[in-house]
Length: 388
Image (cartoon, rainbow, N blue to C red; front, side, top):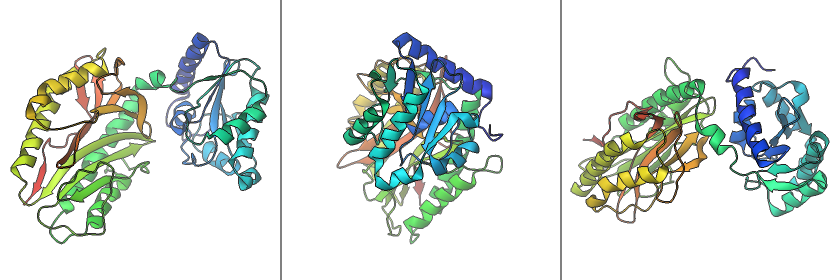
């Protein structure tokens, strides 16, 4: 077992117990999870290796999960997981040389050797499990009855422990620092890449109190006259008057992410952009108290629109989602038809993005849900940053 695990063994065991309780409720003996954030959550694994087949097996009969990895990635596990060597299994490197299907067949065989012949729940919506790979997996598994286990961990992961919240608080301090550094670097004739470099630098370096950790998702940084594209990065251009920058970035601590967004403008913003900024921030503040324990996602969404609809600003996208390991974690979606109920100490990225053909703007913070409303992980000023 590693001495560099992110949480106590007791915490990992509590997470496993919560998963097993849900397995028993659904009448399954085994559960195989492929999503890397689930693997991190249940074992502590911090390797970035989801581009090849891997997963974690939980059975009601075993006291610890079984981690199944590529042979070379076992060395990543021994440095970060709480498991003993007997619970870290590998498939041969040679199998990857002939495609993924043989690997998935071997994973199926490993599961068959470790799990009973009862019902197996499989995370069938995971990336990498193509039709061909799934067929090979079934071939290796044999006759075990399979049900879909996608989304089963959402409820377990939603409520954050004190240790998880502390990692997100630290990440919040880092992302505040990084975004301010990036905004402060904007100026006429400055390369966009140099501004991005400042953000990336401080995400990696962190603060004096908390060193940064590797970013799973790099900073989104759309720069244009109307920055209305939600998922673009900087270009090779330089800054001039009239350019708007929409920053959306996150900092990480032990794979836990705290996200933050702000809009910055070089020169004098238009009256329309200033109006959007004012109305977004007004709706943001009015909605914050709605992030209470027991609130439904759809009710928070409606609370936002009670304030924002009168502004006459078009916005088609949702206003947030659950966040945790590796950014978006599923489960919560702040939209009209999501009736999910927020648990205490759950965390959400409350993002008001205006992504329309004629208009662009973004403002967000990562929030902790409490009995009395939202607590933000950010201390950054709530405003559009204007660089004269």
